[in-house]
Amino acid sequence: MILPHGAIVAVADGATLKLFRNQGAEPAIDLVALADPGIQPVNSGSGQRHHDANDNPDNDRRAEDRFAAGVAEHLNRLVLDGKAEKLLVIADPRTLGELRKGFHASVAGKLVGELSKNLVAHPVQDIVAAIRAA
Image 1 (cartoon, rainbow, N blue to C red):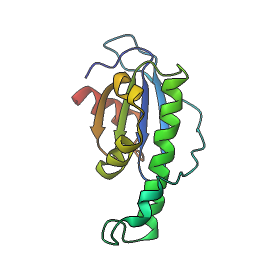
Image 2: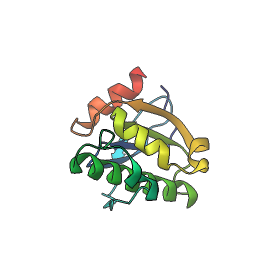
Image 3: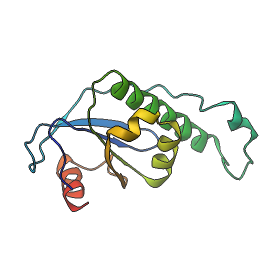
């Protein structure tokens, strides 16, 4: 994948969000870490309480879903405030699904891609390698 210069890369799981900006000129990728946004978990909606216990069997999973909703809200603000012209999202499959539920319609137009991988605990070099391989 070719990552546009200035694109924001969001790497997330159910408890952590790391943000990077690509400072490399295409086709080079040079990810620079951005400040920790301090995501606050968000109640993902009143319909949540109607889910069957099998959908959310424990408090940990509900906490992960609320964190993902908070990440989606933060990424929505970045796009709507004009701070992210292009966005690449890398997240484990479950978190990626929760993020999609919370994305504003404007985010879809700014997405340059999604990678369904859990790379939060990996070094930047592994993230860059996964982007190049996509």
